[in-house]
Image (cartoon, rainbow, N blue to C red):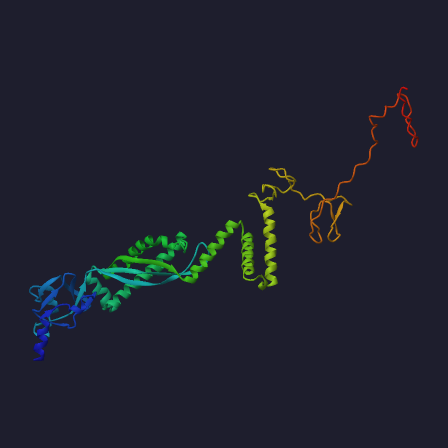
Length: 398
């Protein structure tokens, strides 16, 4: 009775409903009864495999397993059963597209051409595949590598994708000089190239990569932060005119931030560095390098740049050289502390008190001119002697 029951179960052969989502399903029994009814769905094919070779394939539809109707079944007849059984492995292979299969992982460490730093690349995405040659899948993948479940087949395909990406993306970065931070702009190019190259690798297995989706190339967060920091330093250095100017500005910003949080907490060494950098910046404001490399002096009145040897501004005529020192002896005493300062000083060098300019010296006295009431001296008359009394006034007519 048990034998009869087993034979009844073999009369109708089809993929069970629980295995509808599988790429590959293997019929559990290798002894198939003659005249059994085989049902093949529209999106699959039935492959008969024996002695390391594909013996034949049956297309979608319902078929009666009889060697008189299907010639290749004659090679599968089990003589020990009197010709009532076929000795074979039977596989149902889905030919529809399987979408949204995830892949991803690390590719390799590559050198960024802009910074010279080695960073780790990662790639993530989804792919869809389908089986275009079931015979090749059974012969080259199932028969040689013993891959039968969905996970085993999709894991193998994922490794083929990553292997292609490791060689293709890295070679393109090296040969084309792609910047790592801007590599997302090449996603479409990488995607199309990857599909073509991985397809060449999986053709012999009867598989096809139909498309890639959500394709993303990224780098580690710490590497991204490092690259962005270097990019910022390079950009700011160009804006500042040189690395020394940029470093001076960064130092002053750091001192300013520390002072805003409590200047007393700044160490003397850091404060000294900040002051030193401030002097460098102040010096750089007065003297700048021209395009040819010569030093130029900026006018304090109109900000025009002049040659280093110029004594007057070429735009406004302002004197560029330091004012001449005051003559010896021409000093002004500070009314606050009594310190002698140069005559042209506006503030005391000792206490900072505002100074009044030195009074101008009085001009020498000149001989007084005769008054209108005095008659002019007669021609030929001798001038009066010094100390002599003035001549008497002439008397009027009586």
